[in-house]
Structure formats: structure tokens, C-alpha cells
Length: 309
Image (tube, rainbow, N blue to C red; front, top):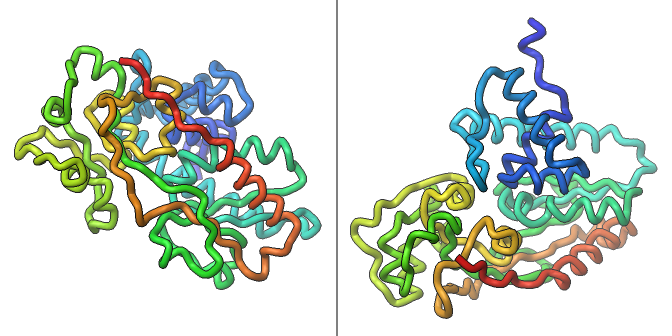
């Protein structure tokens, strides 16, 4: 194998993965306990090594290039595999909590908060398996599941953490030049749809939101479809349906804004985020510590105030 074919250093990959997931060097730096300039240099060094541009750097936003998006998916998968391998050979005396959850919940809610857990409980290692597969805890040797689903699908002993609401969001820069007085004005803007080929997330479609709001979706809406649709909204590509409270930090940091006042939320009554602990793991001290910390994080989260345009 030629030296140029070897992967970049782990620090560069971690810096890139966090920046791509959060679309912010500042947020990635906070998560990694580095300075913003250090993370920016890591990404720049990685781009130089690869000979390809991974981000478009705009005035107040980072946007993944096509190459960056593909690399992000592969790097995220590789880092998860490294975490699994590390957990498998870790000294038995080191407590490990193995968590399964969705990609969205991991990237937007759990991972940004894990630094807090590690600061409080550095003796406990947390291994996160992030994908959209509903895994059997005991069969897959997992301790905790954080699931987003209706109650009947959450599993025995599931504990409700919080529900979810959907509301339109857009970059403040996009809304600055627009006069949004009502839903009809909003629907004239480019609408960003989540790429959902299997129809498994219909509640995040504009069709369903418009039905909940009692308005007709325009036949021609200059619709755009993205797999990372929240990133497209941050980049100013159009209006997306934001998931709250997952996007509360984006609104608080003014990376996204709520274009409507008052009647804008569509509450997903049947779906919520659920905590499930495997029966064999629930009594282990490290699992109890982790689940208690999760409850504390849920209790502490406060809805973000709508950002002014």
C-alpha cells in the first residue's frame, strides 16, 4: 500500500466528522475540547491530504460538498467501527455502557451532550451504535436503546423521555429579504424535503404538515430533496421542517430561525423518544449512572426562543 493511500490521522478524522455533523467549526471545537481555529486547521489539513474540498465555507455557515458528504458517511461508519473494536478489547474492569439509537438523535442530541457525561463520569466508557435499525438489546449485547417511535413499538419497560414537534425553519439569511406574514407566504419559498425513498418518515413531509395546518400544499413549490435536509436549511437552500427539541440549539445559536409566529408547530402525538434498558443491564451501576444522567439532560433542556429575523 502506498503511503498516500493510508487514511488520515484519527484526530483529523474526528475533527472533520464533528464539523460535518454539526456544520460548525465552533460547535465541533466545543465538543472536542479544542479551539475553533484548531478544528479549522484540522479540516484544512485533511483537505490538503485528500486533494479535495470537503466544505464550502460561507459567511455564517458550513456546507458539505458532494465529496464531503460521501466522505462524512464513510468516516462516521468507520469511527463507529473503531469504537466497537475498542469496546470489544477494553480491559474488563473498565465499565462500558453500549447504546443504540438513531443517526439523527445521536448527532443532534446525544453526542453533543456526551462531553458533559465524560466530564462527570470519566471512569465510564459510552459506546454509541448510531443507525436506523431497531436492534434487539440482549441479542446484540447492548445495554440501552434510545428509540423514536410510537409507544407500542418502544418495547417492554420503555420510559418516555420527551415528545417531538415539527415546525418550519430556515436560515436567517434566507428570511432576511422575505416578508413572511402567513403560511401562504412561507409556502412560496423553496421547500426542502427529507429524502425518504421508503416512505418511513412521512410525518416529516410538507404534505403532512400542510394537512395538519389546514392549508393546501402548492402544486409548484420549487421543492428540493436532501438526505441531510437540516444541513441544507442551515446553508440557506430553502425552508425545512425542523424537529424540536432536537434543533433548539440551532435556533438558540441563530443558525436557524422560525419564520412563523403562533400557529407553526405540528405535534407528533403518537411518537416520542423512549429509553429502554436491557433487563440484564438495568441493575449495573454504570448503566444506572448513564440513565440517570439522561433523565437529568432531558429535565434541563429548555425550548429555544424563536430567533429574530
